[in-house]
Length: 98
Ligand code: SF4
Image 1 (cartoon, rainbow, N blue to C red):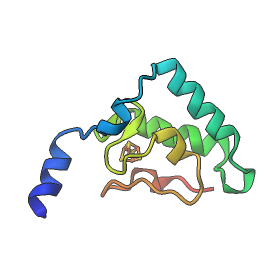
Image 2 (image 1 turned 90 degrees about the horizontal axis):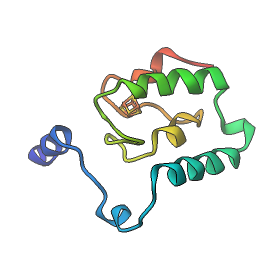
Image 3 (image 1 turned 60 degrees about the vertical axis):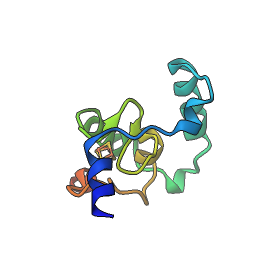
Image 4 (image 1 turned 135 degrees about the vertical axis):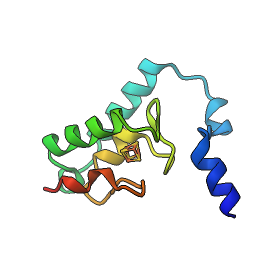
């Protein structure tokens, strides 16, 4: 089991199922924007927290394009919700609270 974790941590893991669906970057961004617009205000973080979280994701070695490889979430979708934490050991978002 430990070997599997090391393999996961050492290389990006891509979801083969997702790669079967052709979608370009603009379509993905628009889909994420539409999803975020559906989130009720009570579960969303304030905009300044959302932006701060995404700024950390932008420089994070665990991010692969739009995806956090630690959890498999799209970072925009994960960062938008109050209940979510950064899944990395260093828990990068913990310095921000609302
Ligand atoms: S959620 Fe955490 S581990 Fe994932 S990309 Fe963002 S900062 Fe990195």
